Amino acid sequence: MANVTFKNIPDDLYEQLKQAANAHHRSVNSELIYCLERTYKPTQFSAAELASKAAELRSHVTVARLDIDEINEAKNQGRE
Image (cartoon, rainbow, N blue to C red; front, side):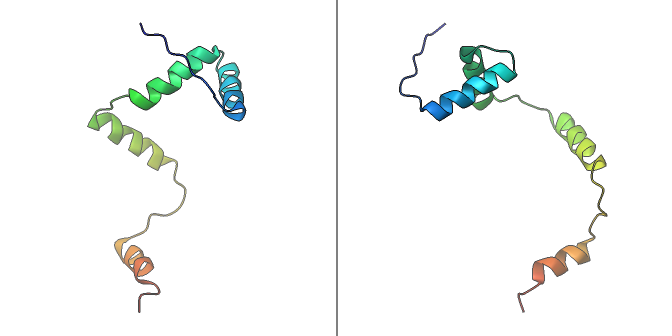
């Protein structure tokens, strides 16, 4: 496994990293690795998983769905 040294990290950024590490019960090093993994090794989801998550999110929407006429009317407002 490689070793990396980070230099000249701005104090405010380091403080944020430290706070996140504390909140997640990790060391600063582990928190940094976690952040890097989330950025450079994103989790791959199947189409079925994405569709399931979208359906779950839609179930939490409490406003009425717009129909196509309402959408077109909103898009065309101010274009005349």
